[in-house]
Image (cartoon, rainbow, N blue to C red; front, side, top):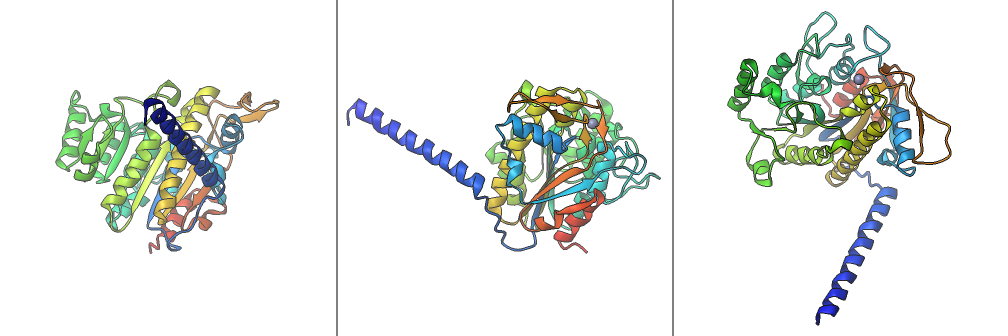
Length: 371
Ligand SMILES: [Zn+2]
């Protein structure tokens, strides 16, 4: 072939590939396959949108030409989020409720109101031989990841939570906040040394294929302090989520537990910053589709997507057009509204109905057949 023929042929192939890719996406969107191998899942992936209620999902949907991957779920319920000392919960109390089955007071991580520690679903999973991990867009010691492994009456007690993290034996942990494990401060230096003693591979960049297959325990610090907002350049969550799922699947015989948090949806809502919050929702939506894609291939993974509480008292007000939303806020803090729960895969039907946030814990144990 002469050059122009090669050029034409390669263009033709590119066009065919583009059409195939587009039609696959369309087909995938309408024919999502939920055909599990059995009614009992082997793995659970819990995705938490911090501060995400129904109106946050609605606003993102309208902004995104009336589409989001939340529409792929067929089993949907609502959870009641109040804490034991307030109708309006914070992330520490709601996370403790979902992950340990106990209501507690605001600010409390993995402890009862009288400060007695309670074992989390993830800690029990490790005892039972499951692999476990998390990927978040906050620091690794922020309230929601901390309820998986930590026990403290004060969520802001980051040094103590970092020490709990170093002792938790989870297999992969991804998020910001390397400063709590830095060599610059004596306590952080000791905690970093403990992680290394326990065999963790610590990295500041995405682990390579070789590292993922050779290392058994990984902490990927994505920043020294809080990670950036998605709109300011943070991109890692969709890829980190699926990387963690593949890593845990590859290392586990019995099964794995993974929590993924879109942490900064809440932060943008506290600031009543519509563009930033929509950017966070788009990042979380992209993470959801990557995880659904993983679960569709795997057929043994239950995916649960929910929030821990609403933030901003957000409303989508009168307006004529998609992408020109009139967003109203009634608060710069959390509210007490019920939060939707979306489930996909084996055991998903268990998550329909209206129930307390503590039931998420009991339902997850029940679908895994834990006594
Ligand atoms: Zn908040």
